[in-house]
Length: 292
Figure 1 (cartoon, rainbow, N blue to C red):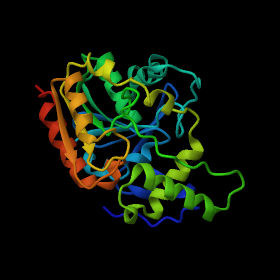
Figure 2 (cartoon, helix red, strand yellow):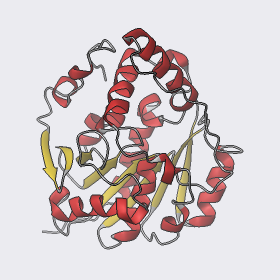
Figure 3 (cartoon, rainbow, N blue to C red):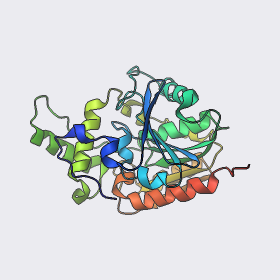
């Protein structure tokens, strides 16, 4: 799909209406969690990555909304959602998301699927373990939360205070290239603009939990079907993506692992076509059959 051309300095233009003018997206806030809602069908909750917002799913919302009732929150401490304590542990952080789910982020008591990217993958597994009667399928896209030693940490550069727009853009572009997008040609002005916006709005540093063994314990308790979408050129797994898939299969024998070639960590943005097809097929296959 084509999106408007954004200049990196015009972060105020990054609003749902600019991307999806004909979709009739609903904006809601539940228990301090702001979210977008669009589409009809089984509910699919999309959880973005660390230092992110709903924009991590900008190339997925419209295709997925053709099949599902898509709910896309800004996670606590990020985007336009509520602040949370900087030292929150996994359960403490998750309690804010769970409160929003119970408060009406999804229809009360109704089954839903969840898909999470990176830090969102940690939270997707946590939510699936926490709500086994509601979550009917969980998809993890380049998830975080692996044991120490299983991560490579790219030397990301901070943006110095007082940097010009051009300098800030250059640093964000370089950081995207080191961690998020494998092909420099795919780091377009929109990606840079969204990264700048998300970085400026992030208050909770999820990496302090995302770089710990926070995924495996949740996965061991998950009983619903699980899909792992693993980008082949993700720079974070150590020693490689295949080893990550092997670990996931040990923790969750029911998991399906799919490796997406020629894509980096932000796989939903760099390879939206394969990702959308995988999510539609997997979530649709496991969606409960509605009876009259």
